[in-house]
Length: 146
Image 1 (cartoon, rainbow, N blue to C red):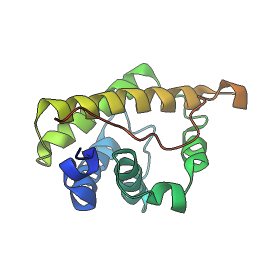
Image 2: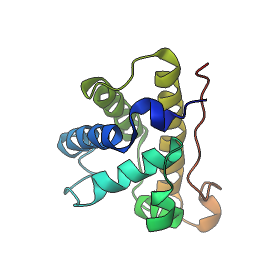
Image 3: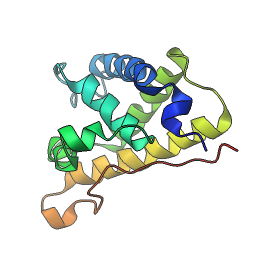
Image 4: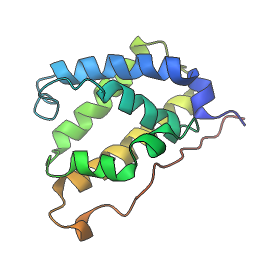
């Protein structure tokens, strides 16, 4: 079975996707609160995370670790509107960067975004460690592509 990572086009394609998404997020009035200033390595880290969760290299885990992801979302207090806008802009970036358009791939990406943004939102609102989502490693997303 082909991984989402391979189907998407690997690191180069995912980097283009994350660049397009990040440019949209930084400029968006709803998300600007969460992305107030562009960070030099943010696109690279997003690429590493997406690549690993789509079945590619585990660079995010090796270089940063999942605790990093929890820490950057802590206390952001992500609203429902921000979570939904994140998904919307990401899906727009998929189209704009020429990512595969087949239904199984798009549905896998949508479910990944839905899950991931809900985890991030829960972690952003946690006031104690017990309120954090129990996920402690980059999830490996699978799909039906036969």
